[in-house]
Structure formats: C-alpha cells, structure tokens
Length: 346
Image (cartoon, rainbow, N blue to C red; front, side, top):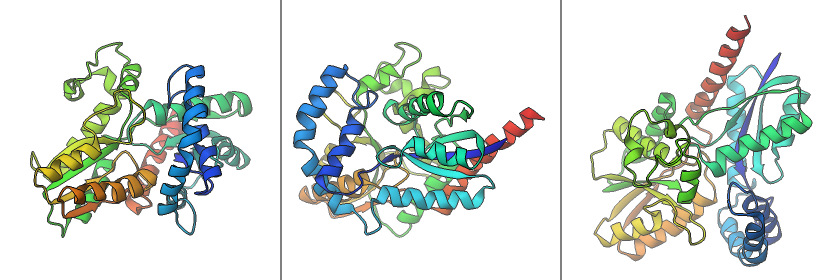
C-alpha cells in the first residue's frame, strides 16, 4: 500500500483584486465552523453585509503584502511542501481549505500517484473548530464521496511536540539574539469564546476564566484552543528561560460583536506602549506561514499602534515558514505514522 502526506493550510485569494478577494471571503466565511450561526443568519451576515463592504478594504490589505510570486501564504506553503518532500520517500501534496488549491485536488494528486493511505497534516499547531476541525470534516466528506478506497489518518494538534517547541524556540531566539527588547507578545489568532465551549468534550467543565487551561490531565485540553495556545507560550518561555513579566499571550483578528478570546493583541500593544514599554517583540505561533494576519495586521497595523502611543522599536518575528528544521518536524510526524502503520501490518 502506497502512503502519502497531504499538507493543508488555510488558503488565499487568487489575486489581491476585490473580485477574487470577495470570492475567497465568501467561501471562507460561509463555512459553518468559521461563522457558526444558523444558515439564514450566516447568509444574511456574509452575503448581505460583509461581502458588500469588506472585499475592497481586504483587497487593499492584500495588495500591501502580495509578492511577485503570488500570495505569501501560498508561496511559503509550497516551499515548505518541497522541503518536506525532500525528506520523505513517499508523495507529499499541498492543499488549501479555501480557494483554488482545493483539498479534493490534493487528494486526487496523491491517489493518481497510487496512494491508498493518506495522512492529513493541517498546518496549525493548535486545534480549533475553525481550522483543524473544518479540514477534518471536509476531508471526510470528500473521501466518502470521491475516494472511498483511501484510508485517512488525521494528525492531532502538535503544539506540545518537543521537536516543534525546540524549533519554534530556536527561531525566536535567533530573532532576539541581538535585540534589546522589554516585552515579547505571543499573539495567537482569536476565536469566539463560544467555539471554546463547543469544543469542550467535557460538556461544561470549561469556565472561560483561564484557570482550567493550566490544570493537568483534563480531557478537554485535547480540543481546547485556548489551553493549547497558553501551553505553547509556557513551553517556549521555559525553553528560552524567559522571566515572568517579560512575556504574555494575546489574541488577534476578531470579527463581529460577540466575546472573543482575550486579551486582545491590538489593545495590549496600545496599553503597553502607553505604560512606557519602548521595545516590543511579537511572535505569532498560531501561524506557521506568514500571511495577511502577520504581515499586515501585526507587522504594519500593530507597529503603527505601538508608535502612535510612544513605542520605539517593534520587532516582528517571522513564522516558521520553510525553515528546514520545521520541515523536519513534519517529516518526523509523517515517519512516525508510516512506521507505526507498517509495524501494525507485520
């Protein structure tokens, strides 16, 4: 049986033109695991309001960060896929949850190469309903309809893998090596608080007060995005020997008026600048590839906020992108799966 790996990232518009951005946003925001309200309400919100107001502004943001080769997220993901492929003896394909590089095409590419066992690897270190879960559900739908002969193995969140923490810590250390900073923000993509509750397999154990995130042995941690973000920060801080008070966890990119995970990144940047912090570094561990949220929202908007309130030096630490050691982490996960599967059939 031929094995294959399918890397899956978020996706991107085909171009930074408003019409392509509108098409992409329509697919993304109509996903019931992204905006998890009844279909009629989601349709009214997305097609009646957002798609009539947001595409032009989002297109301008994409234009600021677009590369000659195309979307940074796509280009960086393709480079990562190539690096992973160099380290493995079986096929590695790349797909996006939204946009033209569909998961169906990615699966078809592997099937055409003879793959009957495929491990999907969502490129998100932490589990979330709007990221990992929607990929898993989409894969299941496609396999049932188009690839019933294929055996799929899912990849759990890898936020607490030691090799991942080592690589993330090393990348941060390299950026901070010659930097005199006062505070480092670990900024993660935000999600509505209700997403945390919906992912709580203990049916109500999570009280949304942050304390349960640090309790050991809780079953809900397997699918708790907030816990996994907090522990990512803790593990990296421990690895780097960061002192208490010199780092913190925040959440960015909220949408709408419902409560989202706090503290918010933009407000924290503003607050710390007003409090006298002059030198800040920021890392975005929920993203493995630099994209609109890191290159524009953080590196441009975040820096502007910081300077407006008196901050002087604002350093954005790159995502892991196509680092060779990060590609090796993914190759390690693939080989662990392939070895376990082979042993099980012997």
